[in-house]
Image 1 (tube, rainbow, N blue to C red):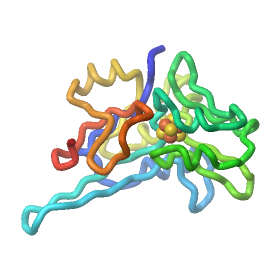
Image 2 (cartoon, rainbow, N blue to C red; image 1 turned 90 degrees about the horizontal axis):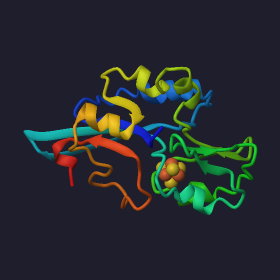
Image 3 (tube, rainbow, N blue to C red; image 1 turned 180 degrees about the horizontal axis):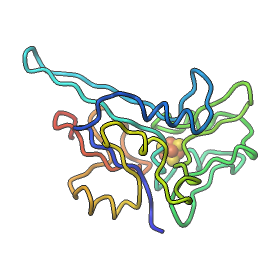
Image 4 (tube, helix red, strand yellow; image 1 turned 120 degrees about the vertical axis):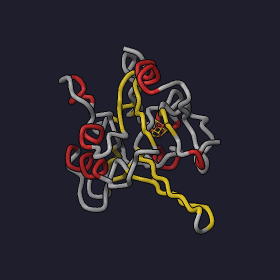
Amino acid sequence: MAQTGFYINMNRCSACKVCVIACKDVNDLKVGYNFRHVDEYEGGVNPAVWAASISLACNHCDEPACMAICPASAITKEADSGLVILNTAACIGCKECVTACPYGAPVFFPDKLKTNKCHGCRGLIAAGGKPACVAACSTRCLDFGELDSLRAKYGYNLVNTIKGFPEPATGPNLLIDPKSQMRI
Ligand code: SF4
């Protein structure tokens, strides 16, 4: 299997946040803790105003800053899928990955003294399904799969960064169809 990742079409995202809730449910996360979040943007001058939103979690980067800094070697990148996996059994709760990730993906749980993050719902994928966020998306703006297959399906004008994002130095494996106002 080649590198996998998420696709998101900002032109269809309605910021309903069903993806956030589906992710929260499948990962059994408490109130106040989420692996996925929706960023919202707005601009223009009345009456020509616009709004945009994008659903984000871990980008399963090519050069994961979280993995590079982890002193416990608790974060690895799967050879077959390219998913970046955090082994909570090995995590020592130092929060270095939380600080290092430019996208705010790792989440520290004070009650467990552990960090965790999106693992691409690899169990669901292995069973032939899609990640919970993708399956739940109310506007079908999210997808997940091998990047080459996603490009073939959705087009080759997709990007891995938009205005307001950090420099894509970690090689985020994210395919965005941006709102025109957000395209760099
Ligand atoms: Fe690591 Fe953050 Fe990249 Fe995910 S998005 S692989 S947590 S650096």
